[in-house]
Image: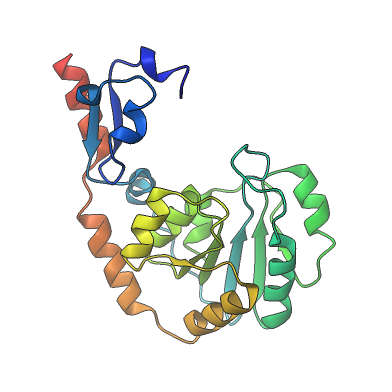
Length: 219
């Protein structure tokens, strides 16, 4: 950002992020336009609705963090957490969505875990699961706005995740034992209140694309 923002004419950001978070890198606050939404809302709104196929085995999806990014701590305990979840829910399909080939090789050594090693459409996958355990990135936000019980093990702390947690759409928890307890709670509930809350939050958000078009036309 330090290199690019001084050359940016207009910057669009979610309203929940203060302008000073970007103006400190060289762009004037008057050139920062905020929108009342989060980026994941665009994905959720435009995602084709998938008819859910009822299955006796519940699905738990775990998303691996962006471990090769500079902002990730390398001493994570994600593999231990995944195995803990798999051991605690043998009656469920525990799915793991990795990012890199090195992760795939490591994860395939785990027991009672299905590693999704093929390209998949995230929005379609999310609509087929019962609980999502994410690292705090975009997919965590998507899951929350779809109304899926969502736990973040907070590998990527960020303002969007904190906002969704305040809205009670995401639960932040890094302790594997407590994560197992939360999953058990979600699986034994119909989660209708959560789904209603997610629909309300999504409907209150504006379309950032419209804001972008308005900004371009004003130039």
